[in-house]
Amino acid sequence: MNCQSSEELQALVDECRVYAKQGKVADYIPALKKAKQDDLSISIFYPDGHGFSAGDCHQSMTLQSISKVISLALAIMDRGAEYVFERVGQEPTGDPFNSIAKLETNKPSKPLNPMINAGALAVTHMIKGANIEERLLRLMTFIHDITRNDQIKVNEEVASSEFKTANLNRSLCYFLKQHNVIDENVEDLINLYTKQCAIEVTCMDLAKIGCVLAMDGFEMSTGRQIIPKDIARICKTFMVTCGMYNASGEFAIKVGIPAKSGVSGGIMGAVPGKCGIGLFGPSLDEKGNSIAGIKLLEKMSHKYSLSMF
Image 1 (cartoon, rainbow, N blue to C red):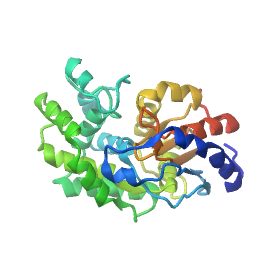
Image 2: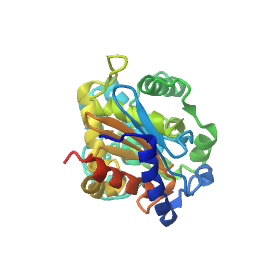
Image 3: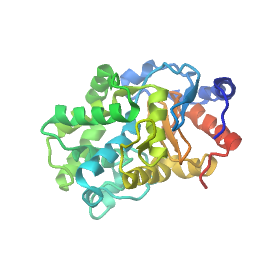
Image 4: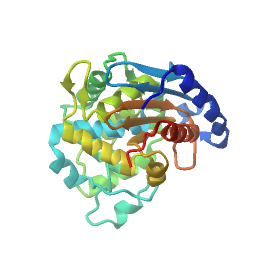
C-alpha cells in the first residue's frame, strides 16, 4: 500500500463522507445513539511504526463486534484450536449476527462461527480466569500489549447500556447453556461480554491491532510474536469469511481484505503483510456495517490495489 500522506487520505474521507446520509446510527443500544451520523475517520499503521490518519482521529469508539476477533485469539491461546472448535463452528452464515435460527436447526446445536453473537458468547466463556474481573483484565492486558496503549479502558456508560438491553444475547446464552456449550451463570457471562464490547479505542488503536494480524501476529517494533502465527491466520480467515456480518462475500469481492466491523461504526482491516487499518463511521447500513466506511475502503482498495484476491 502506498498512501503517501494524511492529505491524500483526507481527500478520500471527504469524498466518502456524503454516503453517511444513506445510513443511520445504531439505536438499539441507547448509549450508541449519541454518535454523529456524518463522522468519518481513518488511520493506517505500518509495521515499521509509522502511519497516517484523516478525519477526527481522536474520536473514540467502542469495539463492539470487533472484540470478537481479539477474544477468539485469546481463547485459542488459552484452550487450543481443537477445544474451541469442538464448541463453535467454522462456517459462514447468511443470517443476521444476532440470529438464533441456526442454533435451533443445526445438529449438534453449536454456533456456526465465532463472529456471530452466539459464537462470540461461547468464545468469551472460554477465556481463562478465576472470575469475571480476572478474565476482563486478561483481555484488556492483551489489547494493551497489541496496541502498546495501556490507557485503553471500558466505557462504563456503554457497558451498562448494553447490559440492560442484552435480552436477545441472554436468550442465546440460555440456549447455549441448555445444549452444554456454556456452563457458567448467564448474567456473569453477559456482564463480561458487554464490557468486552464496550472497550473504547481510537482508529489508530484499531489500525495497530490490524497491523499485528496483518503481520501474522508479529509486532516489528518490539520484535515479539504477540499472537502465534497459526492463530493470527485463523482470525484473519474468519475476518474474510464472516467479519462483515452477512455482507462478507460482497465485501470480499469489492474490497478483498480481512476485516471486522462493529455496530459502533468501527471497522478493523488487516492488509496481509502490509498494514493495519482502523476506521470509524457510525452511520450503518441495513447489515450493521459502516456505510461510508465501506465506501471508503472500496475506493482505497481500488486506488492502492489492496485486494488479496
